[in-house]
Length: 111
Image (tube, rainbow, N blue to C red; front, side):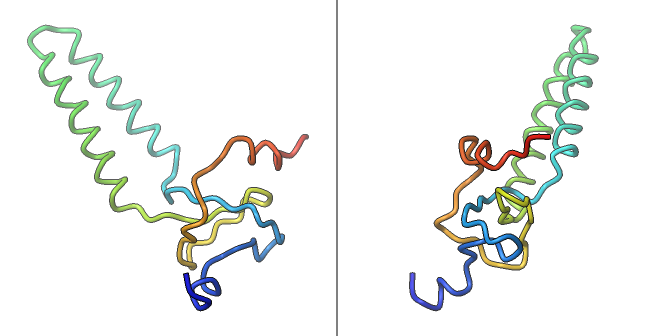
């Protein structure tokens, strides 16, 4: 990594100054959960009858294919552990990894 690279990557949150950042897919979790729930309900409804079981299996295959396509095309976003600010306009720092529960617990706010 050159000096120019380190200037364009986020190394700390510009909002709160926290140096702990993680990356995740920029996809609404509720939509992902809805896809899984609809596929599961459709599978159970179709698999209840022997004649339509194969359709239920195809529903699961299609849901898995949709998931794989979305995973491939949805971009990543950098997120601050402390303030949860999301940064879409900056390139992903290769030093940042996915969410780590131990680090997240460190910044969890107690209400």
